Amino acid sequence: MAATPVIAIFDVGKTNKKLFLFDRHYRIVYEKSARFIETQDEDGDDCENLESLRLSVFDSLREVFRMKEFSIRAINFSTYGASFVYIDEKGNPLTPLYNYLKKYPEHLSRQFYDTYGGEQAFAHVTASPVLGSLNSGMQLYRIKYERPELFAKIKYALHLPQYLSYLISGVPCSDITSIGCHTNLWDFYENRYHRWVAEEGILEKLAPVLPGNETLPATFPGRNYLVGIGLHDSSAALIPYLVNFHEPFILISTGTWCISLNPFNQTPLTNEELQNDCLCYMTYQGKPVKASRLFAGYEHELQVKRIAEHFNQNAVRYRSIPYDAEIIAQLQKKMTFDGPVNLKESSFPRRDLSQFKNDTEAYHQLILDIMAQQCFSTQLVIQGTATKRIFVDGGFSKNAIYMNLLAKFFPHIEIFAASMAQATAVGTALSIHKAWNKRALPNDLIQLKYYVSSEAMTV
Image (cartoon, rainbow, N blue to C red; front, side, top):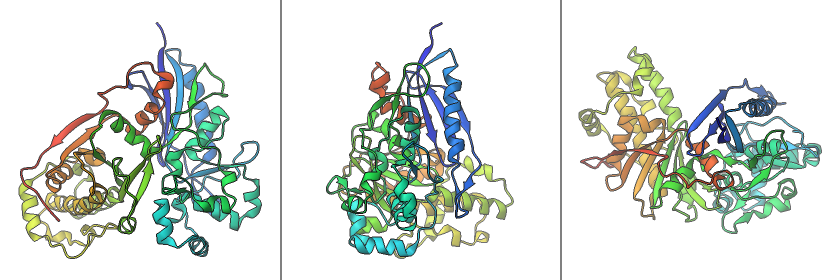
């Protein structure tokens, strides 16, 4: 029996590290998952175990190359963003993989923004809200001023997807989906690196930028296969939707963060949008994607625990509570909206749970409060575009209350819960489709469930 041609995708999240093999129809034919215990950097802050990750990539590849039922034709990588691996002349990492939540020195932040035009003006040009270490370019700036001897040893700073690609191809490179995502590195008006990158001597530490659909020959032992340069995971997750849908749409990607992505809105970020945690991503083809972020998944997890403890219930039950329009109608009568929506935290943490009849009513209120935020956040990236549809993927796409409320809040837009297996990994594979797959791009990757509302709701 002939071996099945496949593409191998490493999908590296903060928690789970996954390897998928997809056949030419983009069906998963093999998967493997791993978790690593975090290590600590020199300051005692938790960070990714880079050595475990490196060895896992090598071991996993050796394993799948031994499988006679599969023929690996290509490999690609998607990972979380805002993370640099600093390598020396020989390609060896010089530092731990610093956590993007690592506290950033206030004096260095002030020094940087005072030098380059102030926070508001700089954020406007680079589409990067002031986020400290989450602005990955600021990590390099910090090393330059705090550890100049280390800075001098750095041959290249590779974003994590490109480092993993480098391990297999031996070619150091940069990629626009990583560079263009709240890094402080890219000037969205000039469509090139911001001037500070050259002025501070950072440019020479950044490897050449290659197209997102580029493939390279492999140096890692194995059969004849090609290596992609890697993608930022949020940009990768958008690719299947761009392949299948061409009329203007919004994708709300839900998980710990709920990110509203509008690939049809390329207008510059306004100061109001920046203040409300809007930013720009880049498609692998180099087009800006306006996005707004909400920490709603994280809040949902915390508040579900609070509800479950108060009403003595198992938190698992809230995964499948049906939508009750009567409860929503009663809760909405009691709701008041005074002033702008707080995107940092919904109203629910301040609510007294003893005021609810039962946990079902309390849970409906939680989703209603989150939806007030979601409506405001998503509207920020819709305005000015003729959006026809909103797709929701991830955890909240399976939440009947969330989906029905979204349909009420956006009555003139078609609302769909989107279901597809591993959107990020599939998007990463699709980015180099032509390099390994002679079949036409599939048009049945995404399953949709339509939600319609008979009445509108506003905040």
